[in-house]
Amino acid sequence: MTINKLPLIRLPATANKTATFSLITLFTLLPTLAFAHPGHDILTSQGSFLSSVLSGLMHPLTGLDHLMLALGMGVLFTQMNRFKKGLVSLSIGLIAGFALSLSFNLNNLYIEGGIILSIILLTAALMSRHFNPVLTESSSTSVNKSYNLAIMGFGALAMFHGAAHALEVPANSITPGFFIGMIVSMIALYSVGNVIAKYLSTHVQNSLIVQRLLAVVGLCAVLFS
Image (cartoon, rainbow, N blue to C red; front, side, top):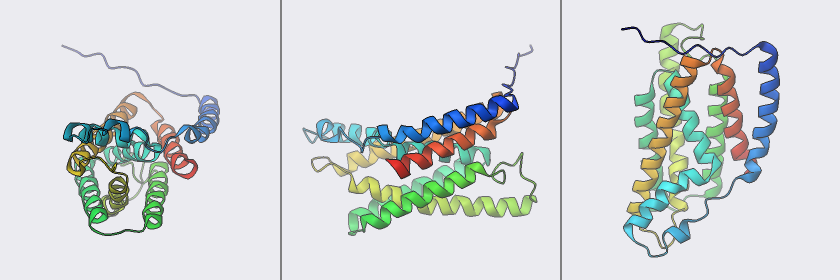
């Protein structure tokens, strides 16, 4: 039995330039609609464990910085063919950052700076051909080293996001419930990024342009929200 494959979507060069300019302009305006994680007080008004889990589930979805970074990381690690390793590294970073933020009085300025740095580095990685094994011209040895370094580096930067999540736990929320919901939501977003990357590589011929647009979205979400 033969399975008909969907044809690749081919974007003409002129269409690429027009689409790039238009979408970048649009995405630059998107962060003005971003909202700083509202609604948690309503969800946890009774302070129950279930409502705390729901609050944690919604938290990464109600801020473009966390949302775009999670999707972008899923895309990046998938195109690197390192999604599982990346998922483990990011999860460890989130857990460690969350725990440290609860245990110590971390400076919020440093946390925000770390988040901005992670978005900038992710943007650069998504813009680069080096992190796509199909497009890179580097040797396999150097690629493996840089990929492993990227996995560890982004895992370390995920600590800043975990710390930020801990600082934003609603006062009347049960912290373990919020934490469980947040972790589940972040892993789900990483997985959505994984699906997006696989779809683009299969159905879009010039998928790098879409990666770059996604990178612009994430960067603008942090800098202008």
